[in-house]
Length: 164
Image 1 (cartoon, rainbow, N blue to C red):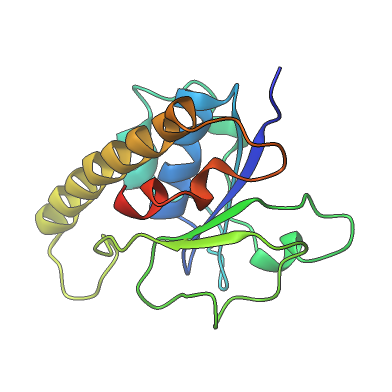
Image 2 (image 1 turned 120 degrees about the vertical axis):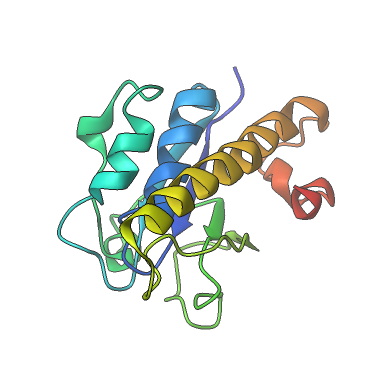
């Protein structure tokens, strides 16, 4: 059996995009990946519109919750193999130092919580972002199946990671 890779999805509030990505990866490829999410300013709860989008396809909603990315920097934190920023305001230079040498990827998605949207626009934005993240995570989850198994080297270090 090959080892499971630890993946951390980052977003500012960790209440929508990163939560969706964590839920999708856990649901689609939990046998090959340990999925986590966090943010630099975590909200108090998962946004209700994110929960509404996830409700019908994710089996373990109760394990999802906003967390500080500092929870993943201590010496007892799980060591990440891959860190994926889902917010244009976050990159590896703004993120804290995570243990080990994780690969840092950036996937920009529109912020469904951006200011100035009506409720109808916000609901449409959540639905669009939901499907965009699902497609990206689905492709990402398939990559290791086609990459030769190299011990202790995350499959995502191959060029295919950047084309997802």
